[in-house]
Image (spheres, rainbow, N blue to C red):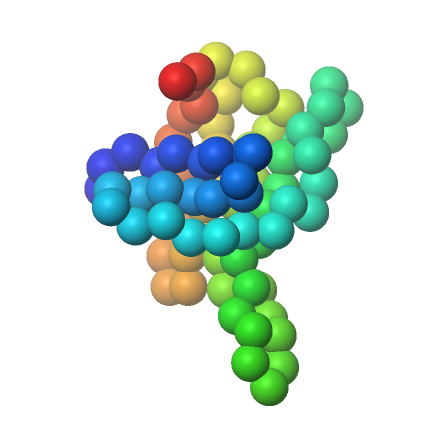
Length: 78
């Protein structure tokens, strides 16, 4: 699958040579998970992808839901 990198400053998910713009729904804190969504914007807007990271710690699991597949992995500091 390759490495998935999320750039919270620019709200971009980078996967290989592809970058997608996301909207941050909830910022991470000691009490909250990080949640970001990618929206399809047309006649109607809807969420097409979701990125969910529990309170960030080294080796903490993350979940990435694409249109037809769900991926998981572990966080590491870049």
